[in-house]
Length: 516
Image (spheres, rainbow, N blue to C red):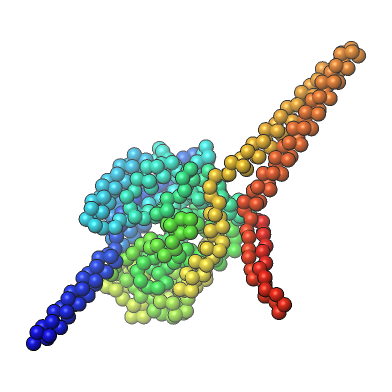
């Protein structure tokens, strides 16, 4: 009997430990509290630039997406008349000024700290849609009557954020200056005074998703009534990029989704380009989630094979998302609440109407032919190629491979120029300037000697000879310094590859050095 009760005691202890372990696991996997500030600015900071039409609409759509996903979002936007008619019930939290941004961020910091004291993990997301540029060696995006500069972003927001992770999403012209300079011909290379550049490294807990359009302005399309990049990001975050259907959209999934969506546009003038840099620099953690949808979210399961490119439209005719799932690639889309919603094939051949507010499968809905929509213009033809390549889960792994093998090369040297290179470059420039100055002095002496006596000309010729010798010396020093700088630069960017050499007679190691 004693042995029986002893066994029962150990069973009870084991059961208790199991329950404690499950409880601890549930606690460790608890979703973090998410906080966000969403900014939209249509107005440029210069009369030479166009007024945007849909930056405020992009901000409104992202704000509602984040709120629906469970985030505490603050909306800073001045809504234009067209958007007010579309969203009569919407009241923004404030105007998009630098003062309002810092005030609302300070309030969110207090909320985040309170959640942390309760044992919660907190995440912060900053979204911006509008104009961007570079001035005085520092990148910025436009606010009303002010700018959100690199220094303000780093020193007053990201460095002050108590969140375990920060996510920065920017749809603005030249927003790629957050990270790097875009060289001619689409070549990406480090830009040492970029928007996100300061003496210290990038915050390791901050990720960036940035538009990098090859044109001067961000792409907008009236058919989307939105910025193209912002629409693509929202399409991915609403589940279009959720290849594994787990409700989390990671940097890898969003990067693969954006790559696939834009792949079929041949003309770089219209092709939306982007940069994805996940938290955890310098390597980056591509599995970091940007958005995590709650289990209670209203969903539409895409389970119809061969559906192709389709889009979802709300009752006001606003485009909610676009996606092109590959054959047998299921998707779990998280849709906004207004009903009815319309699911249409991109070629306008089929339409599904969704009236139910509960989670449903597309195969349960009946289809019908919709009204045809007229198309015209080169821009329509170009953007009509968006989402032309089907998206599937294998492209996420492909994007991760491409990111590590190609994208990271652009960020492997984002530090300031080493002191040796700077000294040689300064020496080359200074010597060239000195040589040019002595050459100008020699020419001036020659001009002055035309009306002089023979004896005076002899003295002037001596000075000219000395000046010419100094010029040659300075030019030689400049050339040698420039050659040294080029050698140091190439050597620093070298790529060393080691590979085994196996032959019937010998075993060895082959080394090769390549330069960009």
